[in-house]
Image (spheres, helix red, strand yellow):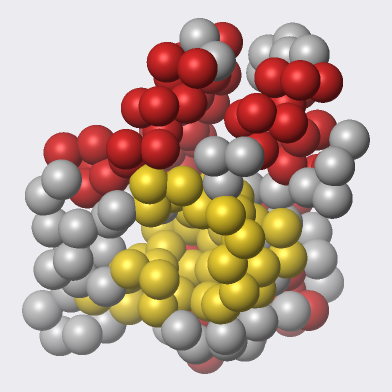
Length: 192
């Protein structure tokens, strides 16, 4: 394993690659440092890169017409971060991706990814599986937002992101849950 061991272990969860294939796959990714509060994608831009989070935390969100943030998900260590629709279509995004902490990510662009598919055919299977899992997660999130009350969504948040509440401000968690900061305080008191 290389210095990107967590990245390679993540890959191996989905497909069986040789050491040579892992090294070749890793060569299609570049290390990028991102500062806290820096956007790696903003509304109106085209998502030209996908990233794998080695260190740090990102929020993926959109702003409504009143500039209220709605957080779709957080990307922490061992998670992938991008707007898949914009990345694949080349169309401008309606989302923002912002670092909530200083972060380190591995990035690749669309052209490199196409080359990766040609050089390592198993990579297409890898990303197909990961995209299916991501789509299932989006469906679960939508259903949870519709079916569960805020208390249940808060408990789900803590299960999904067990250490995140200590790393990010409470108003970020409230934006993820779709509640006010004050209502989140009430929920936290009630469930603890």
